[in-house]
Length: 59
Image (cartoon, rainbow, N blue to C red; front, side, top):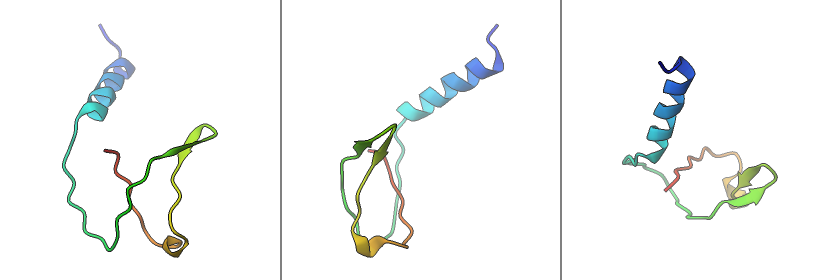
């Protein structure tokens, strides 16, 4: 019998493998590759985007 944590872990990995469709409305779009930054990733955006709301979608 699997415990609760194992069931949740399997569900999360299935979710990550599933592609979904997003419809997004905005003013500008930039396609970039994420660069390594310590234990994380980083994407540089134009300085005029500072203070604006952005959304990131992994393709």
